[in-house]
Amino acid sequence: MKQIHDNLQSASPTEIRGEPAALPAGPTTGPLTPEELQLSARNHSMPLEALRRDVTPPGLHYVLTHFDIPDIDPASWHLRISGAVERALELSMAALRKDPAITVPVTLECAGNGRSLLTPRPMSQPWVMEGVGTAHWTGVPLAYLLGKAGVLENAVEVVFTGADAGVQGGVPHHYARSLPIREALRADVVLAYKMNGTELPPQHGYPLRLVVPGWYGMASVKWLQSIEVVTAPFAGYQQRVAYRFQDSADDAGTPVSRIRVRSLMVPPGVPDFFTRKRILAPGPVLLQGRAWSGEGAVTRVEVGIDGTWLPAQLDKPAGGFAWRKWTLPWVADPGVHELSCRATDATGATQPLEQNWNYQGLGNNMVQRVSVTVE
Ligand SMILES: Nc1nc2c(c(=O)[nH]1)N[C@H]1C(S)=C(S)[C@@H](COP(=O)(O)O)O[C@H]1N2
Ligand SMILES: [Mo]
Image 1 (cartoon, protein in one colour):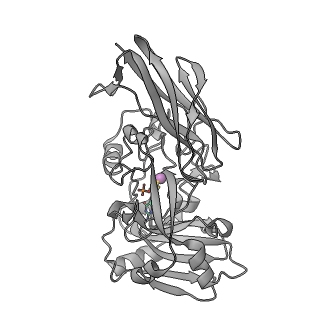
Image 2 (image 1 turned 135 degrees about the horizontal axis):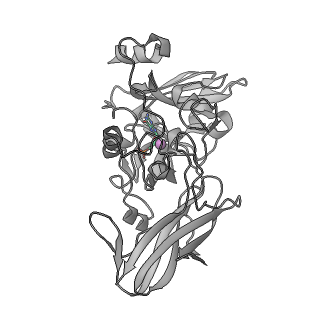
Image 3 (image 1 turned 90 degrees about the vertical axis):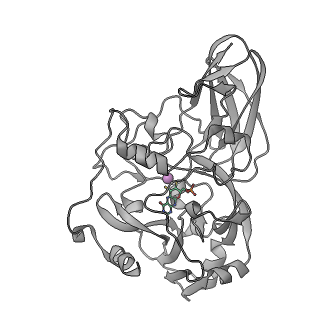
């Protein structure tokens, strides 16, 4: 196992032997492919009814895993901190649990959320709109450990590498991402070993993961095994090729970082099993949902009823980067209605009515529309 990892770690794209790995085709308008179905069965979203809860239980929180979920023995596992530091560190789980801990409520959202609603549709995990969840993450502040190691003056980024490996875009690699030094030193960036007060589940990064509040999920590296302080920008696959806003395959694009403002609602009434269209009895109903943004606090949520926007009531947020509950009382009258919700954040950014297209289908935050038959 270690040998395979070491080979992957040092392999460059030109060293791939044998059959080249299948690359996904470009964006398509065709029916969902078996490969997309396979990905969407492995990587599940959060059922929208879970928006009723402030904190998402692990089994309802969305999951996105590029390769396989590693099976890590916490007794032999170590976290290595190295690179442009005064003292390299090697820490066991037992040692990390003795360090000071913080708990941070964080809304995580996959950068590809909403991808399957795009036309043409980029070929990857075909999220609809529920690739999101909010958990309380407990662990050691990253800044505390970087302080212990002593970051050198010439450091520019910190690279986080997971234990999971595979091939993406024809390139063998461990899942790895970097953060600029100033983000890595934020007080709320955490190396978490607990989710909602209990041990991290295997699919969420056991025994240790990074959580970067406010950033799209790709930054929060799971199954963390090493942290390297570097003096030049990291050029790993998940940094330089994946997670970029691009117009086309050959556009260098710009990196994806913080979560764009978004809101979702709990679809009212009951669903039709197959279509999931909503059926609701006439009369008063409390519409509710959650809104979040990684750019600044959510300042406004409006609910659209057949195209008329009404201001929703906002509850107190649970934290700087945790979603905020909104409610709006509505009296449903018989007929077919279209409900929607739209949030605005402190930067003035508002959710678009139509999605701006990009090549990898990232950063989608267009308003959700729910069709309801009142009868
Ligand atoms: N090691 C590792 N970390 C990872 C990933 C991965 O595939 N491997 N996926 C990333 C992506 S794209 C997202 S959206 C989040 C999902 O976190 P969750 O599965 O705990 O919700 O984990 C991120 N961290
Ligand atoms: Mo993601």
